[in-house]
Length: 394
Image 1: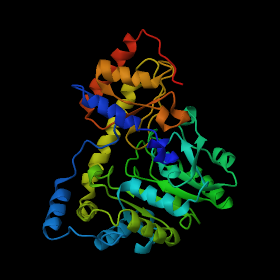
Image 2 (image 1 turned 30 degrees about the vertical axis):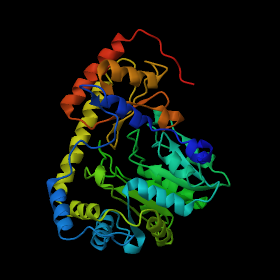
Image 3 (image 1 turned 90 degrees about the horizontal axis):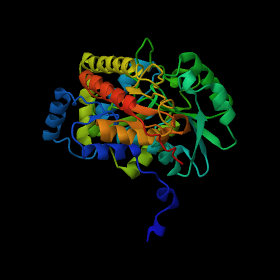
Image 4 (image 1 turned 180 degrees about the vertical axis):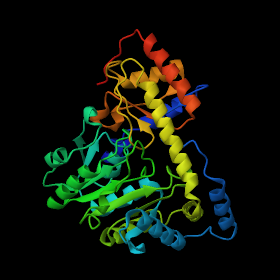
């Protein structure tokens, strides 16, 4: 009967990130640096206000586009940040950032359309694209250039079937942030070649080391051809609430809302009230959490760069580090499994993130600084004690 399962679903890879997490769950005293989830709990005020609203009756369907108050608050927040003058017609609330990606690709892709994606990339991008008949085309980046995609590499990957460029800055898994001048050049190229842009900006609050977040949507002419994906999960420590949103030109957002209405009806009403409470919260609460992630990233960077064979780019954003360990092993997957088993540190091998990440492993700075320090000690001990050669993965 498995022949009745569609070919695209048969070809879906199981999540290596989830696999490492399941293996870790069976072990004691694991320092888990694999899942990209803030270790902070959702702020008490957010939980209390969501509960209050639920008790007052906010437990029913909302409009498919989103809770009216939340839409108003999001419009105010986006315009304060980007000064683009969007209105509610440019916005839809979704079931997490992933729900926004699914709805966007379902809206704009036809069978065989190509989506250019800088490599390394978040592994779920590929199934999001392929499940609607599209084709992911990796655009190579280089460790030596901080994994920042170049306009020249994008131009070289464009074919007559190219329809969308997907950007993710700050980046998961590399921590790279696309500089403003590079965004300017990419914007010129996109308009010259008449492409759409999907800009995944879920880590927009997590930018440090003197960098600042810039959205390609703010470049001249780009608001009409860019859909921005965002989420409450990372910035507000609200992963389990599953609330994201997308904003962009009305000619895309209106049909996206129709897609949402048929796929999920609407996002959870109580979660939308929690999101509204988060937007009304004192910004200092979020800023403090972002500073903590920046501090952890710097701390882990300094610790890992002292380990023999680890090569690192200093992260500019998100809460990930993506060191190259090709001088340590030919098989980062085996390295990750052995590190978990022998030293109880959970990391993710780089191959699920694309060809450019095959020699890397991903760290998420989602534990306390004390635990990060202990993890570095365990990793260094593991590396220095390695004697067995590894087997290269096919």
